[in-house]
Image (cartoon, rainbow, N blue to C red; front, side, top):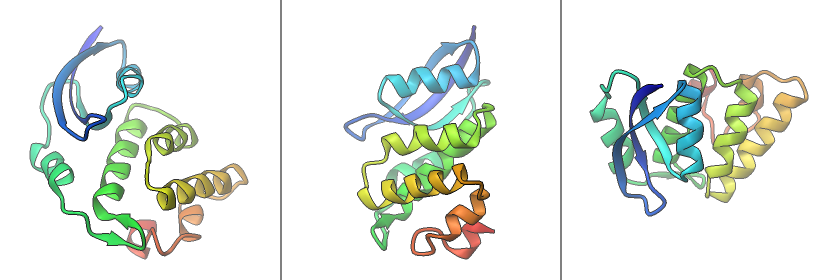
Length: 139
């Protein structure tokens, strides 16, 4: 078992910084997901980019067509962690979308997943939602 350090947001949106023992990064993410927390940073060696994590947690809500910049930042951070742990893209998107509470973003992610299942690339699927994912995000 490996010891992982993590930074997460709890159900009450409080910041949690702790350790978890797991067989792999993927297993650690799964255990934390089952605890109902939103993982912002996960590290095997205990070092985190605290400034980036703090910025995501403390960012002011800047809504853009119903999805705040902070929500998108957390989404992409979770996606990067899952992909880095070897989780397949569709599985990672499905897992992350279950935790999204913003109805517009949840619909967008479900539609994006559907388009990927239909054979579109991730970029092509995101391009169908320019009000959520701008050109620099898609590129």
